[in-house]
Image 1 (tube, rainbow, N blue to C red):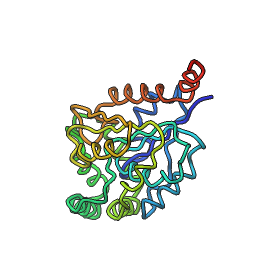
Image 2 (cartoon, rainbow, N blue to C red):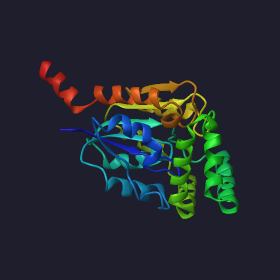
Image 3 (cartoon, rainbow, N blue to C red):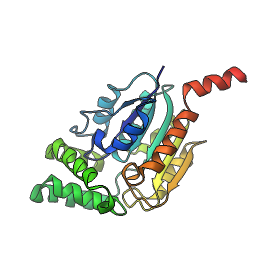
Length: 245
């Protein structure tokens, strides 16, 4: 039976932001990218919506805002996770410095449009956004625009008001992998180091040459890392290990 991998995207993103991971994993796993949570006004409301779309047992991979949602889901996932992967995220409440940037991006969305706000966000989030394939950049921009201004505004305020996720880190009861880009300015590496320190037995991987967007900036490296992790922590592998113990 195929295992399920749930991929929760970040700010103003949908399944297109995971395009390289979906392509790499879907011949081996059932890949689920939740929908419909982006327009909700709080992280707990988003978490509830995502929980409605996940199976009983699965691997959970969350990126950026998706990590805030995943942390809020943890009280409802006892014994259900095969593994837990956090990519470029934080368990802390909002940093006031980030709030200033978010409000500036909201202002840009109102005055210049969502496409301009999206490009501004991505330029800050990547080491070199212009180096990404032009078709990929256009796909991501159109996906962000399609989600709409109301969703963008709701997400920004949900992030600003998000609960302290550190309270739920002790609830992680499965293998955990924490991934961050060395140049991440949105959720710097010390945020990932904090999550790693709070989850006993977790693994931390710092990716060179990328910033806040490893799924897009270094997809091949991330894909290899994810596939190795999923195989190592799948039910089938655990079953074989127990049978030979």
